[in-house]
Length: 321
Image (cartoon, rainbow, N blue to C red; front, top):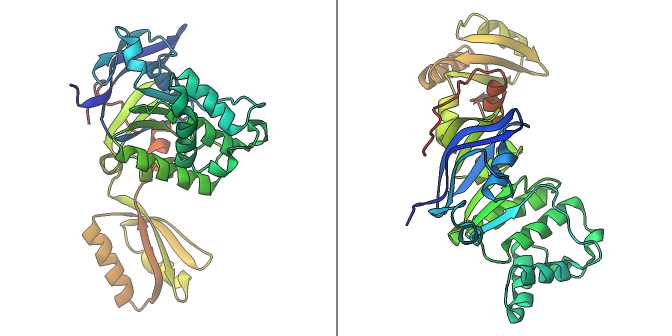
């Protein structure tokens, strides 16, 4: 029995002469929430569609729970729940009717369908909307209904392509809570998104794709630590006289790009944590009283910005957590 819910080996996806995904090797452990990150055109949707069996790879191998997708597709697909971005609903049905219809399509026994419909609506916090026509739903509510449909047959692997698209902030928080609850049941979740800060908080592991290449893979913390250097942005807010503080900091060679505006001083600091603590002591000993002293290392947004500028080199074709 494989310890991995999803495995790809040397996966390649071509559209004519264009290569969307090149030699992608991933190992996604069972029970993880795994984020697929990257700018538009990185290959995220192509990868998820191939995993869902909707796209034939040009080359490579896909396994779901150790089952080869090409050799035993039916057994592999029984494990999968796939939610595409902008999935349609049937406008003339109520939410509950729509879900009941798909419960039958998934082969649930008739006696179990209505109870399961109510269960998945509760999962996605849409119970009160059950009798609304699907055509009256907002974009975010529609996404939640489609997620409920994806859960009907109790898949052990969820493939979610931009599931938070169109959701308001409260709905996004609900989505995070729903995915965390599903993970506790042993479900493995692969989710792609451009909402990078939410992925960092939601996921146990991440893979960063860029122009079809896998650039980084591992835990959120390990990816950020690999992308970060000793350089970080620094915001200092003195109680008074920010111009004097800026002039004082100009003398420190570890600080660059110093800007003084709106009552605060910002710059870029290069040095260790010990050196940063020393700088704070020097500022206080020089007589400056501070409201705020905020150093900040790179986040996922900065990692992707570096990728766009080609500052991060492609990693090995094989990336194991």
